[in-house]
Image (tube, rainbow, N blue to C red; front, side):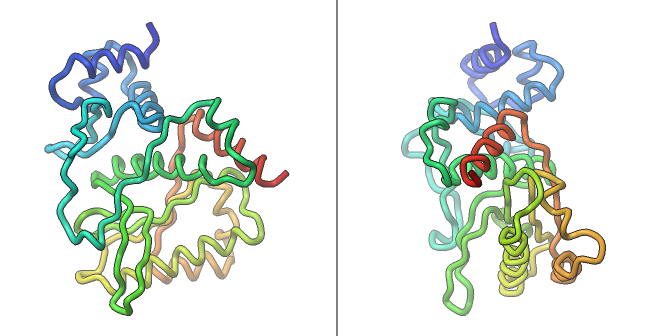
Length: 240
């Protein structure tokens, strides 16, 4: 029996969601990091959900056991965007995506947001914010109290010339939104999946200095290997 089958069986036999430590104990899959990686991949495939539990830890529960009429989270219905979709993701589906599609990147950014949520100990979700100017702004992630605002970029390797300005634009957007939130968010984060993607922002780069002056932090998360492979495949199609 594979590790993913052991984990799914453990969840099927539980009446409550289980965190990674509990899943490791019940499924016999060790070390805990293996459980974490498998659960992230299962979440990408839409087989389970990873959400913040009552004690603040990320817990896992089968997507098939969710209520179809699950209530919406509290908050301004105009300001709160739905969670990113989790379509069934596999090799056959990936091969059918047209060249230039950002499907894999969007899926990878969902995983990145979950990983960042776990490391920060907050639940980050896509948000739609209405600025006092009347403009509506889409954010890749924010917590319910808007103490953390996040933009994600799933890209492997150095940024292309045009892409170097994307991170600057993201930083300006985060700063602009933060200035309209009271109290001001504690963290503004641009999250990337590869240190090489932000190499151009190091040293004497004016863009890197400007991003820092805007109060924006750059964070790198290490994606699971299958997700990295899917992003690289997508980039290869886009650039050929």
